[in-house]
Each structure stands twice: as structure tokens, then as C-alpha cells.
Image (cartoon, rainbow, N blue to C red; front, side):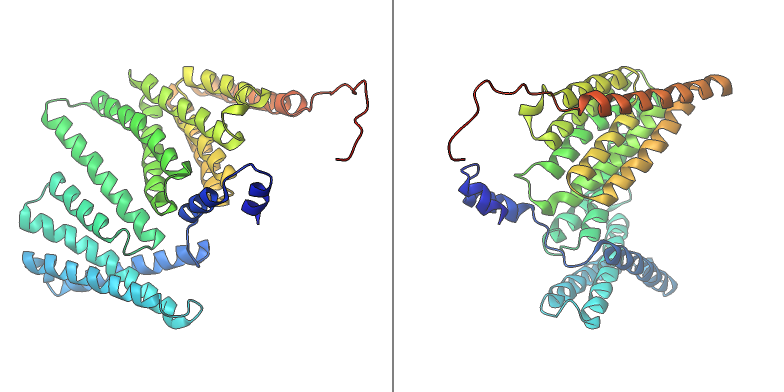
Length: 362
């Protein structure tokens, strides 16, 4: 109905709008709480299954672990596809989904373990095994939690591989790790938000964006705490990401010179000069959740903001009295910004009455 009304007003192309909406809509009949329960239950079941196989000494035979993991993944995919022909409101459907998730969870872990046993342990082997099993099952096994866990694990393995290569080149020490983290934020923050909000990117890739967003948030906290010499790189990345996200949430580039956006950009630049990397990231996550009407993302962003501010004040290491004064000043500043937005930024301008009344049919 919305697309029809907009096309009747001549604002959008209805065919193009329906195509984009079809790509963006995530077809999932399960509510959020049920997906969380399924994930917890499958994780527990998969852990017990792995424990049973370890008790039976299955992991002592390298090739058998690899083959058994592949077989379990295949059975999980078959069971998952079978559930698509069953009414989703039945108990049988829920049980089969639970069983398929437990099998794919245990199967992927066994596949990675078996690959390390057969081809040699190492970060490269783990990354390639995770990449292979994630890419081969991503569009076949389309459960959100599995996509989120698998893609996040693959990106963690990639980060571990990059860190291992850096250390092998002789670049050791906390400073070099912090530099690598800053570069990770530079690449990860814009890419994560682009995957999530870009209208041309399918919603099927949203778990990848969410996983990358979580990893970037972890790196932002680490860089905020360590405050390396390259922290300005991460500050520029998250500040630019926040500005773009803000423009997207407010309606595009046409809102760039509105009072709301101008004040927000000035505040973002001021925070970036203070290397408030994690707090800026948290604000961007809050705006993302608000614009997408995703309450869970907004709640996570709010909690992340509190954590990031605590990490930033702890990183300053200024003593109890100075830190308390800084927190008090920061709180008063936030209250002042709130009243600024309420009393001036969002205040509608007074439009003078027209000299000649408008007549005619409207």
C-alpha cells in the first residue's frame, strides 16, 4: 500500500521499489525471543553431542572427525529443508529446527577440528575451513543465528590470521596490536554499516554486517582503552560512519544543512578530536537501531555507550577526583546538549503569514 501511494504521487518507481523491498525483507516467521531460545537450546545440545563424541574417542581419528562433521552438516541441511514443508506452528517443526541447528553447530566445529588435524594446525587452516563451511552453507541453511555465528567466527579467524602474520614479521608489542586494531576499525566500521543499511544489499547479508559490527565495537573499546598513536585513524573512521548514518536516518544528503544535522556533526567532530572512539560507535549503533525500528539494537547500543564511557574515563587514568569531575562535567554537557536540541534545534521556525491568501481548490 505504501509503495502504491508513493508511486501514485510520482515519487518512486513502483517496480524498482518492490524489487528493493523484496531484497531487503527478511523472511523469518520466528519472533526474536524464540530465535534466542532456539539458539541457546541448540548450543547446549550441540555441546553435549560433542562431549558424547569426545567420550567415545571419536576425535582420536583425524579423517573420521572431518568426514563425520561433513556428514552432520549435510544431515542438518536436509532436516532444515524438510522443515520448510511442515507447518511452522507445529511442535514437529520446532523440534526438527532445534535438531538441525544442533547438528550444524556440532558439525561445523568438528569440520574445523578435523581440518586442523588432517592439514596441520594453524590460523590459516582454521580460517580456510571456516570460510569454506560458512560460504557453502550460507544460502542453503538460512537460519539467522547460524549465519551470525558462522560469519562472526570466520571474521575472528581472519583477524587472528592477520595478527599472526603481523607477529611473524617481527612487529610485536601492544602498540603494534593497537595499530592493527585501528586499521581494523577503519575498514570494519564503514563496511558493517554499509552492509546493514544499503538498500541494494540483500537482507540475507545482515548477519554478516551485525557480526562485523560487533567485532568492530570490540576493537573500538580496545583502541579507546589503549589510546595508541594511530587512534586518530579509528576516530576518523567512526566519526565519518556516524555522520553518514545520521544523514541516512534523517533522510539523505538534502538534510545536511538542517540545524539538527549541523549540530550533530559539530558534536561528532568534537568527540573525534578527543578520541572518543567507542562512544561515537555506540551512538551510531543507537541511531541504527532507532532508524531500523530494531529495539534490541538500540538497547545494545545504549548499554555499549555506558560501557564505552566507563572505558574511556578509565583509560585517562587521571585519579579519582579528576575522573569524578570529568564525569560531572560530561553529564552537565549532555544535559546542555539535550536542552539545546529541545529548545532550539527541533523548534519549528516561525513562518510569516503570506501577503495574499492562497485561493483555489487544493
